[in-house]
Image (tube, rainbow, N blue to C red):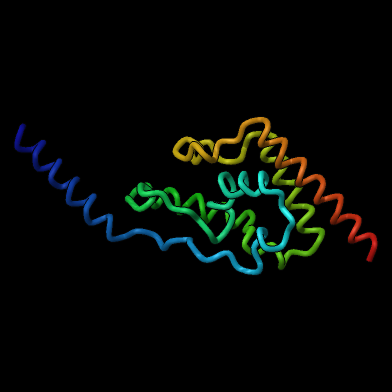
Length: 157
């Protein structure tokens, strides 16, 4: 019995080591001219909240922590990033028209208010990503103000 346990543990260790060679590609491009941080006048406190809670999964600029490089965590994080960018990629902000931006901001605020974002599984291992009520209000207040500005810009054209 002891021998079987040692063999199983040995096989698991070998599989774990081999799995490290099959990490997903990193999502760490530079912030380009299309990025929301380059295209919006975002107050510093709001920008900090976006950087801590949104941009890792909703842009091309993920800040990886040491444990993000270890499989299977790397696969899980990559799944979060792929899903997040499919929903909304803030690195492509400039290419969106005004109506798409308003819709995105409205949906972002709604998800934040409902506490659906950031994902609980992400926030559990990223304490800086957790939003308190003050940060939720700060984000939504800025988003609602920006929607009003976009609406005025669109009507004025």
